[in-house]
Length: 106
Image (cartoon, rainbow, N blue to C red; front, side, top):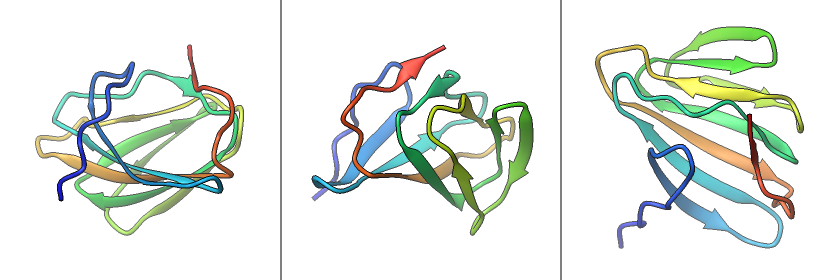
């Protein structure tokens, strides 16, 4: 069964693939030129790059990431993903523990 695209303030393809009282996982696909808006999550986040090349910004740091890269983003630190390439970019987002507050856009 295909996971539906979640409506989100970033306007990108985001599909919740796991959601329990303990953790949440979201599969995000960014098409060329798409990006997430800079935002702050209330919990720690782990990102696992599945496909393509993307740029992650966490705080004042910026890094290009390729498949099989794991990136950690601490709670309450501004971050976003950007697809500056010419192919789709896919990343798995894991939030632990499951957030009880909403993400705040900057």
